[in-house]
Image (cartoon, rainbow, N blue to C red; front, side, top):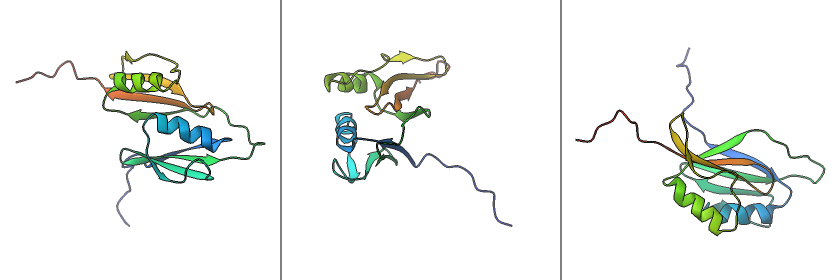
Length: 129
């Protein structure tokens, strides 16, 4: 038989919305660039590093509920937090160093989807030479 396949990374996160224009404005305010779709589309795809952040329109009778959290690695957690606040968004937490080794903050999008923006902390046992 063939080789055993391995998981190589996360390709995309797709979230539902009842208001595409509002969702697109939210993600654009955070700096996600639209690759496909837009405020009037039923499906919008944004660039997220080597992957994608997708938004798909859902009928009003579909209840959107908590499913987990999408975590995006960013180059500067504190600068991303400032960008969110300056765009009028209200993060759930302020940037903090976590015991699991990353700096992060949480933000909830207009449809109730939880997002985290994170960056690994420098390892304490590393030395500069």
